[in-house]
Length: 58
Image (tube, rainbow, N blue to C red; front, side, top):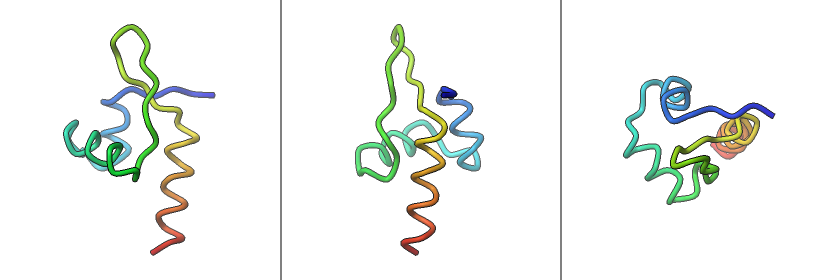
């Protein structure tokens, strides 16, 4: 299991802003992050699964 931080997630999402990423989390488009010591991390496999689900729905 690999964790990615907000900067790595932004790179993966074509330089999306922090506020856009957090808005997508609140709307359910992206999975909720895990908090370690005040920092947010996402499980990369969950992000990839969310991408696949969105592309299949389109």
